[in-house]
Structures are given as structure tokens and as C-alpha cells.
Length: 366
Ligand code: UDP
Image 1: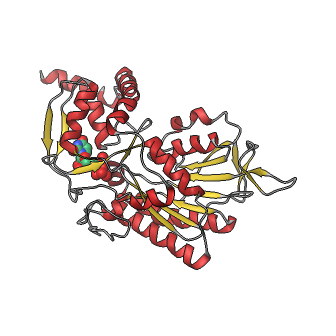
Image 2 (image 1 turned 45 degrees about the horizontal axis):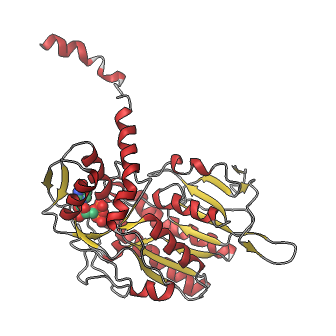
């Protein structure tokens, strides 16, 4: 599928699909998109969508928090190539590139707290490298930004014009500040080098391929409910989030990518249907038919109190608004979580060899 040559250049051997196209006359070729983090939850849905639209897709990923399983079904698609690559290192791609979609980053609080330096590096060095690629190729650059740039917001709902309230040295700063830097360097490339840039600020999103154990509220509550375990609500559960179904998000990203305007575009992408975390727990108990209890745990440091996108701008410039209600989305995603829980429960426990020597001692102590 792909090969790294001696000089570090990545050569792609896969021929492309047939539409959409670049150029005219005899030399028309499929438009090509590079998706960093393409094996992640959102990235893999994006790979799928662009392939379905006739693009050639090059997926770059180092699998830090993602999985080859997310893209295994795309391996036989003629326009698809997976390139194992850590984008904090320089990116060289042979041939033309029309779009660079930078989605590489740990994204759940649990993941970025576990990988703080990698998160800062992919947001800074990774974004710089991805921008360098876009600049070299004359490609449109799309940065997957986040509602976390607003921190623990004092303005509600959050419009794009709000500058945010972020603790620069708190535990979440590794993600928040990395993404704020990523936005800054993206805008600097637009102003200095004329790169065409789009910055969707993505609010909480859910759907198939979320890792059961990624620590986010929806996979946690789903897996707890489906396994008959108590649902762990942080704090008193009065904090709010607004959850967007992944197909709606991908539609917004696709429209944004194709928007025919030269100036930088920064927009919120999310579903404005707001819910408290406590009410979400109750809804998940209802949808799953579970009789699990709800238990309360300490609120993590700097956990935002409220979050809801102001979607007026995105509605105006892209004509986009989410189609899937939360109720509908929870029902749609339920079979995926049921299957994921079933797969985990079938896994054979790993009795490591190191516990064997301890056994005689434990036995003699009885
Ligand atoms: N949360 C919770 N129980 C969990 C996981 C998360 O109550 O088991 C809360 C978390 O503290 C936050 C909200 O749910 O208030 C959303 O958390 P998530 O990790 O999904 O993403 P965030 O929006 O904080 O980035």
C-alpha cells in the first residue's frame, strides 16, 4: 500500500478512484486528501466519507490512541492508503495533495492526561508539519480544533468570537493550549503564506468506533449501563455538554472543506441540544433498559461547567445544522456498544507469568 524510501519520502503505489478530479483535458486525476489521525474515531469516519465521494485518501496515523481496526475495512478500497507515521516528524508525500485534514491528537481527557507531552507535540510540531505539507502542495488546510479552546466558558452558548477562559497550567492545558497554539499557527500560515485554512471547533461528538475505555462520558455510561455497573457521574452532574452524532459532524466538515472562499474560516461544529451529565446518565439507563445505579464521583480539576455551541455562524455560511437528535443518536449507537461490550466480555483474561512465583508464598501463608 505504501513504502518509505531511503530518503524518508513516502511513496504511494495505490492508483486512485475516478472523481472528483483535479485539472482538465487529458491529465484529470482524482482529488487527493491527506488525513492525519485517520485511524481515529472521527478520522476514520472522515476517510470513509471522502472515499465514498470519490477522493483518494492517504491516512497518516501513529496509532497512539487509535486503531488499525477502524480502517481495516477500507484496505481494499482502490483510493485508500494507510501510512504509519508520527506527524510530529516531518511529512513528505509524493505527488499532488489537494486537502490536508489535521485530525491527529489524543482527544479524550483520559487520553491527553495519560499522554500530556505527545498531546502538546502533535498540536504544535504536528500542526506545523501538516501546515508545511499544505503550503508545499498548495492544498487547503483544515485543522480539527475543539470547544476546549473556550476552556470553562463564562459566555453561554459559546460564539466563535469568544476568546475563552483557559487555565494555562492546569491538567487540561496540555490539550487546550495545544489546540489554541494550533489555531494560532494555522492563522499565521494563512496570513503569512496565503494558505487557505478552515478551523472547525468540534464540540462533544459520539458514534461507532469510540473506544469503550476512552474515558469519555458516553462510552463510560454506555459500557457501565450494559454491564450492570453503576454509572459514575462526576460532581453533582449539573455540568452540561451538547452531544453531536458523528455523521452530522462529518457532513459539516465535508461542507467546510469544500467551501469556496479564500479567507480563513473558523466555525463551531456541534449539536446545540444541551443536557446535564446527570440527565444524560438517566437517558442512557432508559435507552439501554439497564437498572444500574448512578453514583457520584469527584469532579475532575477544571472540568467545564457548561458547553453549548452557538451555531448561527455555521448555519449561515454552510447551511449546516445537525439532523440527528440525541435520543435518535443514542438508539443508533446502542448496537455498536452492545457488540463492543460483548467482545470485551469474551476476551480471555491474561494471567501474566509473573504472578506464578507468588503463588507458593501465598499458599504457605494460609
Ligand atoms: N463525566 C462523568 N462521568 C464519566 C466520564 C465523564 O460524569 O464517567 C463527565 C466529565 O467530568 C465532564 C462530562 O462528563 O463533566 C464530559 O466529559 P468527557 O470526558 O466526555 O469530555 P469533556 O467534555 O470533558 O472533554
